[in-house]
Amino acid sequence: MKFILSILLAILLWTGCKENPPSGNSEISEQNMREYIKTLSSDEFQGRKPFTAGEEKTVSYLEKEAKRIGLQPGNGNSYTQDVPLTSIHGHPSPTLDLFGKNKVSLHLNDQYVAFTQRTDSAIAITNADVVFCGYGVTAPEYQWADYAGMDVQGKIVIVLVNDPPPGMGGTDSTFFKGNTMTYYGRWTYKYEEAARQGAAAIFIVHQTETAGYPWNVVREASIGAKLNLQSLSYTPCQMQGWMSTEAAQEIFKSADLDFEKAMIAAKTPGFKAIPLPFKGNVSIKNEVVSNTSKNVIAMIPGLDQREEYIIYTAHWDHFGISTPIDGDSIYNGACDNASGSAALMTIAESILKGGPYKRSIIFLWVTAEEQGLLGSAYYGTHPIFPAAQTVANLNMDALGTFGQMKDLSVVGYGQSELEDYAKRWAEKQDRYISPDQEPEKGHFFRSDHFNFAKIGIPALDAKGSYDHRQKGIAYAKEMGEDYRTNRYHQPADEYDESTWDMGGMVQDAELYMNLGKELANSQDWPKWKAGSEFKSIREKDRK
Image (tube, rainbow, N blue to C red):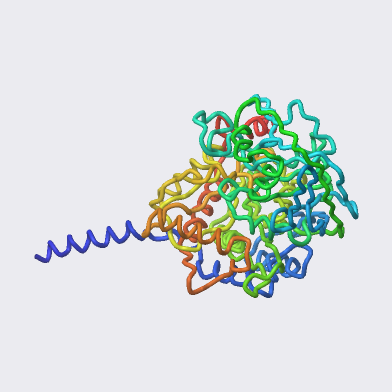
């Protein structure tokens, strides 16, 4: 009888371990991570917006903590890298007016938002022709040319979000990568291409399903000053922005056209841009200030391979103080991205205890991610450590707050061999690799790892997000949707000690720590996989 009870007890213990596997590394301190998050997301840090007192507090705190735990300065004798930015606080006209057979006036914030990257004190677009240009894509490799046969010089261009076809449908996975968004679907590309075509202004039609976030996120992001790198790689349109789906429908209806039919036509190869029977007026007045923000950078120098680098990244910034929601005006950004910044510091603490390492390990907290990945973009064009000698980038952004996960979801799955390294470490945690569950939303282009990929460095952005260890897939989806709807880019993204389950963050931090340590003591160079658009950049750089 005692033998049978012993067997039953062993089975129960084994089952419990399978359901709640140990974290696997006690050096990752959940308590330390909590303290970092609690501090960085406190009201004292005023939402961590660049060019504010919140930035000064954040940079000072990160530098102080990096010194305290024993990291060395990563930029010569300095723990920071200057990032020259221009702050443009635009004040668009109350309405975007279209004059034709029927007048259409789109109301600011409710139906349209606008901004400019130009530093003129005032911009006025008057009596401009209006053209619907499908997805606004010129992609010779796919024989796709939305602007073909249409001169949009000086005109107002309206385009759809995402790729053609719009991230849903499409049985040929090689055509715009099927359901996986390419860079052609990203709003930054659409702005760039409209500028190359000579448009005066471009407005992207917002659709919640394909954009991945509701209209209020677009609206709030447009309010207040926007930051830009002082030196841009192209001359932007006079004005850029978004309009709601309802606004686009109103425009087409007033022109005796059907917006739904136009969207269907835009999905078809050979689509021709549609001139709309309107002349458009819209203006913007600007307050322009140039200033310098800071990336924070620290390192653990390597030994015999010290001139080969692994770079960890997380962005420290958020939206500062902005439009009050339910009486709260501080956009604390606890999950996005005090969580990643805290995980980065906690990983650094742990890695320091396990050294020395052959390769150098860099810890980079970048600025102005929320303004368009600007801190990492600046680093990409002004790298402190040469891209050809950088082995990998490991990026962390908005880690989960609702417990341990079975999965490790990889953004941009199929891009590089880093996911194969991550798979091995995930399996040690009794987890499995999951491709990005929303590839149509282009998450690979929406965090700082993208700017490392653009210069050829294999980059990984991964976290548990899809399959909760105890409560499963449906629960994880429910919690993710709740965050996006009720807290993402809102004042409600606050640290709550009573409800935050840090088990998933600890898992992810351990995995990233182990992966970085493996690379730091290796001679391997992870490669981009066949079909990656970044493969040729790396191969050219590493010759």
